Length: 172
Image (cartoon, rainbow, N blue to C red; front, side, top):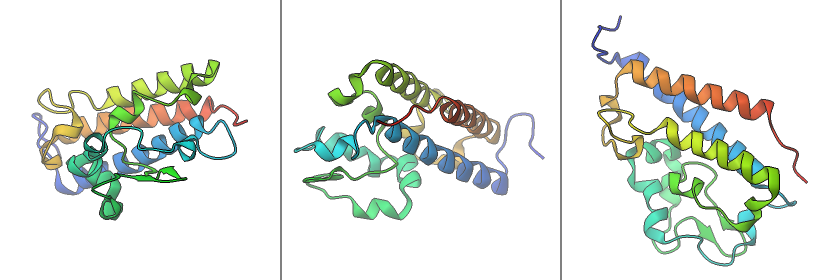
């Protein structure tokens, strides 16, 4: 049982983190689905890295994103990040939140942009002030986060995922 001050419980803490990981990955995949306005993913049309490598590097330097990536973090290239010529960004999940702030022009198509922008903004906001005023991406030790706060993140991610599924746009 949890104390009133929110002391973390080992097994419950681990379970909630795994739920967050699964929901986070599912939402990222849905965000990328929204961006697929052609037969191939939009990132495949890029000819250069879309951002600076140091921004891309956050995916392997942030303890949270590294947790989301799991073993996939070992595939990171120090020179190109997740970019592969002719294939674009190869990161399916665990992207830095900045990736969901700036997008290529393909996202500016009418309802697609509004839908994607709104979802992306809400997705990023879920992790703001996770613990002691810090963003989830800047917390070095995820075990510091109290169980009630993790549960709230799970609830927020679940609500966002469910709404995305209900409002899923059709890919053209």
